[in-house]
Length: 172
Image 1 (cartoon, rainbow, N blue to C red):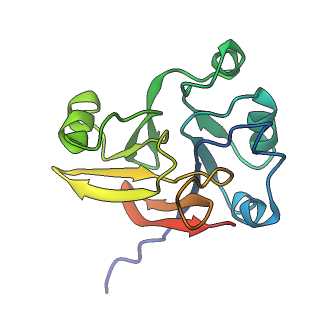
Image 2: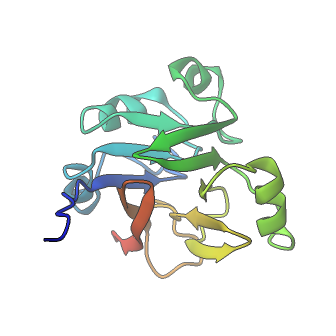
């Protein structure tokens, strides 16, 4: 008789670069659809006003880091410049700006040596890359797509310390 392991997936919605109130006027229906399923929400900075974080907290607990456009009010909400957290056994680092593309993986490994996953924003360019035992994930921006074809969010599924799925989801 085999062991029957119960799967208890933690759904994580990842946002960055919402740039309210200029860009974010509230969660669009396509963003809200994902937020309703979230067990936790990660925001990788450039929130710009704390009302966004209050809105997100109405869906699920929020962890946020400060971006270059975030002021003392975002820091007062609880946003450090970087953080490390545990999501169901997966060690996750967060920072807004991961720096230049060249050397990003080794630089993030040095900054977050014990992390399995690093979430970042700043570029508005969705990214999901792995190397050196580290996965880097940028959800892009749901509101300011710049040269990207769509506004995007990230959706992660975590179970027992394993990242089961990571997706960049178009929302515009």
